Image (cartoon, rainbow, N blue to C red; front, side):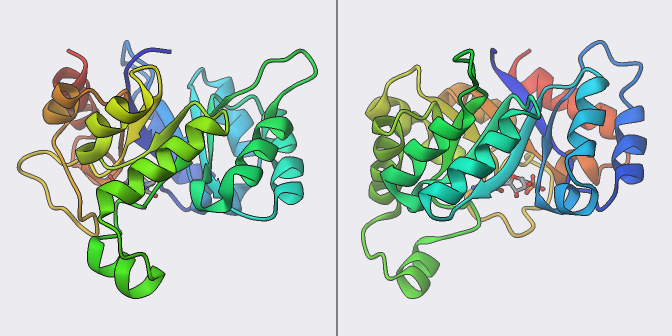
Length: 234
Ligand code: C5P
């Protein structure tokens, strides 16, 4: 899988999601779709099968974080859904990440890509210090989590685009950086604190950008998606 724009389909229902995806039916490029907690909890695994059946690649963003045995069993279920990417919190520790890989790996040795969340892009240094009692600089924390994920055998991390270059420098170019917190130069940041444009994300070497509201809340989602693809890949 090469560089791509992943559209965060943060919708409350199957109907809203499929109506949104229908807008792309005339597009040459089928958007890579991110299914998050809202949609998955509302509609269950069938929504993954339905979107997959329409020919979209899927990043199932459930950010698992539990004891290793529970994560292993849950991942075995997700692996059977044939998703392309799924994820865990690196804060779950090495043992949990290794268990996740074991659970994901099918009898034939194949598995979806597994990436780790380092620090959410909505978390800033102040929140990390006050709420999580982590007093190191954000970049040091993110690099440590990324290296821990790499050593546990994961394929990459979800991180702020501001950290993608440093992650590649620390963990190697082949270690994937999947970066949300993407905004056009002229769109609202919302609750995202560490943000970047698609063009800049390309320049610093993000492998995948995850874009939600700038596309889903746009008056013309296809135009907004195309703008992202042109800036990031084009
Ligand atoms: O609407 P917006 O472009 O901010 O959406 C970003 C998406 O990426 C959301 O679905 C959010 O849950 C997800 N995400 C994130 N930061 C992370 C991991 C995932 O914003 N660190």
